[in-house]
Image (tube, rainbow, N blue to C red; front, side, top):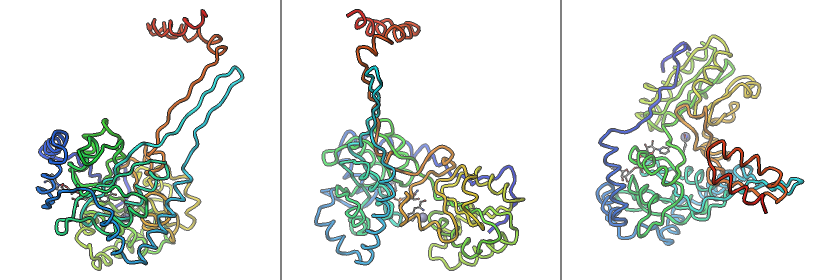
Length: 423
Ligand SMILES: NC(=O)c1ccc[n+]([C@@H]2O[C@H](COP(=O)([O-])OP(=O)(O)OC[C@H]3O[C@@H](n4cnc5c(N)ncnc54)[C@H](O)[C@@H]3O)[C@@H](O)[C@H]2O)c1
Ligand SMILES: N[C@H](CO)Cc1c[nH]c[nH+]1
Ligand SMILES: [Zn+2]
């Protein structure tokens, strides 16, 4: 793994993928076709891209039960315990609606309402993570969303969805599940077909066709974010254990050839040890090819002049995941301004958050931690403002409001107020 000096140019190499012109045109065609032809288009594209001919896209209750029985009992217990931790963490994010009443009778407030329906896209293939099913469905449940839909492409051989995904969905409490993938599934969620009623918001990652389709339907429905490849930055001093730092870097590198994994440290001794250790551990990994490309193209060990420079470097990266492996990580927490999730100390490696602790693993990537947050309960709710003026309140303030309206040249606004002042 390469060792570099921190300089002004340092940044995680970003891979913001807007797709090719051809891919964007394909996605537009697919969406239009699903809008026009509904289920028939969904069926045709599933045959074309997934090689499966389906008469019914809906996963039956029997299929869910069968999947549940196929997953090892001990694994089911682990998924249930993780689900409980995730539920308990997200319940703490709930905020009540509120109202205030002033002396003149004015009532002002904010009413919080869950979205009616949301759709979660679960990617196909090896990226069909049951943990991501929990991380999307549970905050929606906690928010109070009544209808939670899951859609995922059928396996090219069996025509089914992975048993662990169906089991996680059942444990999280989502049982309206469809076998449909790609841009056609996003179009079906956004606009509906004969079988799939439309939803109000679409969440979840996917390949370039899924990402482009989410961008395309945004506005007609809401979306969560366009998640990029995984990122980890580690801030460490010479008390860190090189083998642990290396394994944590590789834990995200194995996700994606474009995942980024960087160490930032003022210790050149640690830098050398970690660099060698990454190379050694890489050779032993099953997903060696993926991790190798990630480390080669998007990985680095950065040596800073001192801890102050290292901290500023981390803030400028605004990584998805940040591990602090220093003598006293808590002391540095207050100086971290930008990171999706912050893992403190050597007993909190990143996979603790991916699977089990409770905080959401759907996190801002590509430096967007500067302005956005992990997926959370509020993403599945919306707010309505409440206003009630008493007669006295309107009489006391009506002239000011009418004057403000006339300042903007809006006479009908002013009269709407004044017609009441005269009575
Ligand atoms: N950021 C995260 O948290 C996260 C987590 C898991 C997976 N992912 C990403 O999800 C993706 C999974 O990709 P995948 O392809 O295995 O599954 P996918 O479900 O995203 O896409 C499969 C679908 O793509 C469509 N498709 C394939 N080729 C097409 C073509 N030529 N034209 C039109 N549509 C086509 C098909 O409809 C197919 O069903 C990866 O990019 C992975 O990095 C990200
Ligand atoms: N680290 C990924 C998000 O960046 C999430 C994940 C799922 N499974 C394992 N990891
Ligand atoms: Zn992960």
